[in-house]
Image 1: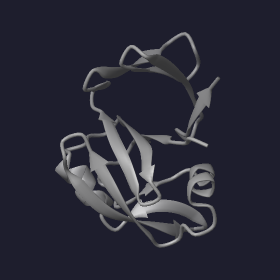
Image 2: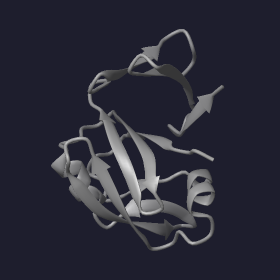
Image 3: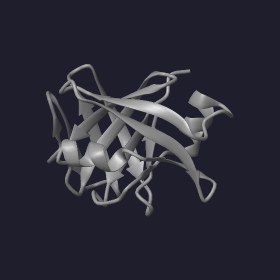
Image 4: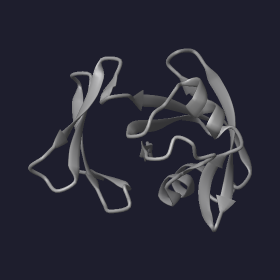
Length: 138
């Protein structure tokens, strides 16, 4: 099953970012704790981060702050993580709503919703709950 996850960067100074448990369970099954992952970016940069358990939840840490500083990520940046293998993730960063030829817009008519438009191929619709967890709406 193809899976990915989307995060909204609220605190760029944080040393970690949480990962949805459903993503971790689907992609890494039970053997995910203390797993070394490579994060790849379209710029050609690559980082190593560690997937750890913090308060029973998976988080990317031990290298996450380097990713944020190298890419100069700011608050309110939308991040998409696509798995490349069991040891890698491709990171796309929507700075000011734009990432390459892709963009996202805020849908003001839908409560806490926005649309992510990826090239011209397809459009994904997400709902954000009060904890800024993003859910794909089909």
